[in-house]
Image (tube, rainbow, N blue to C red; front, side, top):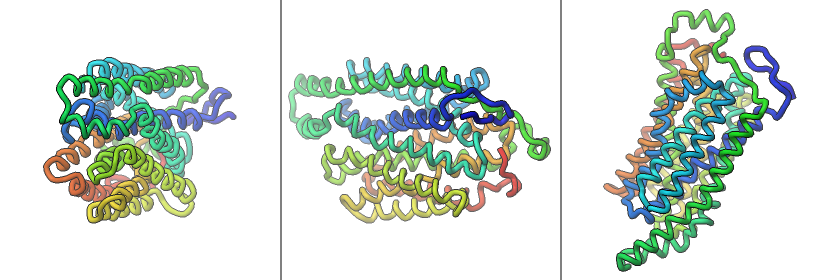
Length: 431
């Protein structure tokens, strides 16, 4: 199948670009949502507090803030396709560090590995998200991103279950109960053995990442030229000197920061929260899968309804309102019902990413790469917001700590209602 890129040149014959990008979304979904299981697992293996355990998400997501400007340079130098290959190799390097980290049980090495993997993902996201947004009509961008989201969240649903098989969570539960009464030598030996269980799955991850890097490099994935604009858009942007001249982009970065924060809270705290509600880890390991399934349901709804029945901004409004309601439901109920409301946050969060990206990139034209790098910096919300949740969970309790999500959803609602139009004409829909 031959497709045209934005500069009007036909790419090589080959696999549909959507298939390749879908595979990339699958792998970074798999790697990202492993964190939901690493948090309670490393809390036991490395003898951490709740607050310390949430540095797993901090190390992973802060890389987006640090690496986003570098990501733009990588894409300017290598282009979208080769930049994706570079990103996958960087991720593989981060995964390699899990081997010495497990052998020494040094938490800092785990965090460094997570940071490097997050750095690779920052490059990959900077390339893949605007790519899937630009490669088709702007008004259906949320639908295409929803398809990518299904790939991402199916991987997220499978990741904790697959990793859980290797980590033997049933014995981890028992060890967590027994560790306080063990002699020092026995405790250290048991925790060392526990930490070593992460090595086999991460060797598999390294192999898959390197194979994907080679596949993308050899693929006929078409390059898109984001520096060219049509005459009308170029004229409207003639007075713009930088991406910071687009207020709706800056507000979009803040919105994305808060959205990723609440999405990570919903996906990465649910196992630990279930355990705090008296549910065994062997059962709780399936809870992240529930969150991911709820997100997939939301993506399917988005594919059917956007833009035919509902506009992107209206989908974002609805999701923000659901986010507030489900958060309150989790706070004011207990046990499996409360955990169920956290899982339902996956449904509330599902169409936020697909809607925020096209709304924030609307009308930026030749500033697309710069705007994309800023938006990727917003993913650092996954580092900061869950860390606040962890601190509140220690100071207050894991359930009441979910109050932090309510103002986040309210700001997202503001962006959906008015923020995405600040500083731009409402009729501007081209990228």
